[in-house]
Image (cartoon, rainbow, N blue to C red):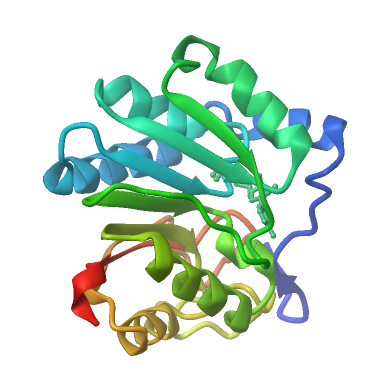
Length: 220
Ligand SMILES: C[S@@+](CC[C@H](N)C(=O)[O-])C[C@H]1O[C@@H](n2cnc3c(N)ncnc32)[C@H](O)[C@@H]1O
């Protein structure tokens, strides 16, 4: 159990090949994430057009990509990550989807871009908190408006309401995410579900939430 003085969070070495392989092994059979992936798939299904492109920010070892490519026959999938080591693991996992999966190396703190069709999907899971600040998350939400005409799903660690613990600076309250998205003119902004909520016994791997928003390029 965390002590009250502990800051809830984790340090990573995503560019290190052994670390990437170890991270993949740690989360390969994570039951609650399988539920999360199914829920993300359901949200996408309800909003998906045939032949849509899904862009995943921080694709990591490609777990979610594998689920979604398996579930939706007609989609193409762009997996963006700044770690060559993670992209290598993802490419290996997604070998059988090579005709529909494209790995892109880019840094989310920079001017990343890609072209997406109308009714596209941007999804990200357990990644944006790693950018280390609310400002960096806001930057990503803002960049996504340049490429998105469709839905954005961000499933990420948050600072739960009522906590007495300190959290690393990228773990912000759900309400702060929602406010940022609203201020950027996203619509239908909401929390769809929270996972492994434990305010009293926080760890680096519980208290995560799925956020949903829509952005239609015609909006502004
Ligand atoms: C905790 S892992 C999650 C991976 C995957 N989304 C999942 O849930 O299985 C976070 C991922 O985000 C990537 N990442 C972190 N900071 C990044 C940045 N500034 N630009 C691009 N990718 C980044 C890491 O390399 C890593 O693959």
